[in-house]
Amino acid sequence: MTKKNTLTLSKNAMQEYGYKIVDTIVEHFLTQDEKNPIAIATRQEMDKLFLEEAPEQSSDPLEVLEFVKKNVLAQAGIPSHSKFFSFVPGPSNYISAMSDSLATGFNVFSGGWAASATAAELEIVTINWLLKIFKFPTKKGGGIFTSGGSMANLTALVTARKQLLGDDYSKAVIYISDQTHSSNIKAIRTIGFKKDQVRIIPTDMEFKIYINKLKNAIAKDKLEGLQPFCIIATAGATNTGTVDPLSEISSICKEESMWMHVDAAYGGAGILSKKGAKELRGIEKAHSITIDPHKWFFQPYEMGCLLVRNHKWLSSTFSEKPEYLKDVEGNESEINFYDHGIQLTRRFRALKFYMSIKTYGLSAFREAITYNIELAEELEHSIRKSKNWEIVSPAKLAIINFRYNPIGLGFNESKLNTLNREISKRVMISKKAVLVTTELHGQVVLRMCLINPRTTMKDIDETLDLCIHFANAILGNKNSTA
Image (cartoon, rainbow, N blue to C red; front, side, top):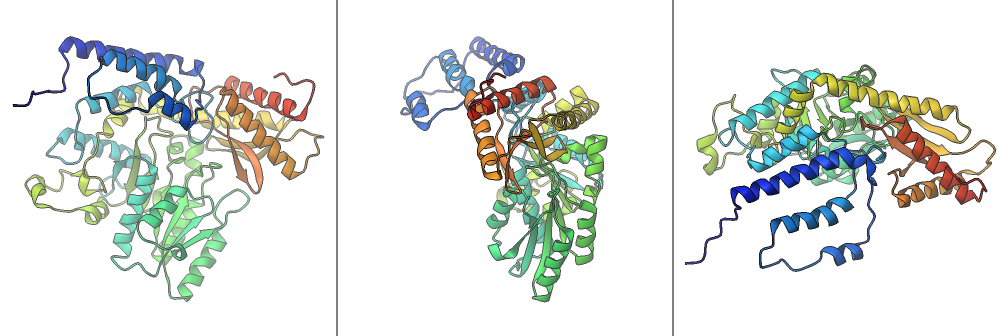
């Protein structure tokens, strides 16, 4: 008989190993802002360090852990760093990180009620919290946690297609703006819509979808015998934080019998603040909403969420009854979340959200989000008083866009674009901050996304000083010190 290997360690070995991992995570949370927020390496360098055949023989677990700490974790980027300003930072929180460890350690299956009623129940409870926050009906409404906004958007569009179109969607048309997140484009292609079934509506000077042009496009498509099907509104554009006119879009969808999906993956959590709630007015009228708790709800990756006005839309879209699941169907109140989305095998995502809200309280999240919005506004106020900087897109839901354009510089747009790209490049090479560019109306700008509650004006000022230092060096100014 082949020798049995149970892939286990002794109790003492497990405890020692576990304590070292917890100590490593705690140290990271306490010291992360003292490290560089970004690590830069080539594929060649990475291959040299890691590339090998799968080892046949065992190694000491503590030695493997030390290797990973030194070569993997210490060389990884830190999206939770207080100077990680680009893309959408991932601030996370310690309680959720430890909760994720519990969910993984117990290997909880969160697909069906029979496998883990507690996991399903906590997903029901936390989804209900979110339904109430977004003023969706809590009795009829529902939702599901996903890996992220991309999967939530995909799930929403599959649901909308099933509920409004059935199997024939050859004449259906989807409307998005030029600021719609790329995940929606991927979702549209994935579920079989062709390029000529998508209308990209331009945005105005504030990067909101042009309502009149949207109406014109819908009217034209109807005259041509097509079926206007869905409008994807943006609530917190990744570039600018801008929110589309949600109430007006809702009125159009109601009049035209269309589905209104709101991609609030970035901006949705802003609803917890007074200013954010004002920006997001009308979101409660949507048929479906995507939010990303692993962004501004401060959860670790991966955690997205889809909310819908009627939970039956999900079950009637995704429910399948293979023979091996018939014995565990349960009753209607015992939700099997594999019937509400694409995944059958699902990790226990609800636990980290549940434990962090229970531990810190919703008011702590509300205060953190309000602080982020006010921090961006404070930065805008500071920049407007400076001779070095120009606001291109003002602070909106904790995102602000600006560029280096000192009074008297006299550069044309092309030179300014080149200059700001080079400033960003040198900041990134320095590894002292993560600050990359985006492009708005043909202007290359520096974009700051300030959703980390630990980020301070000192962090921002130090980064702006670094930018000016590099700008002076690029321009050959004698005074090139920060």
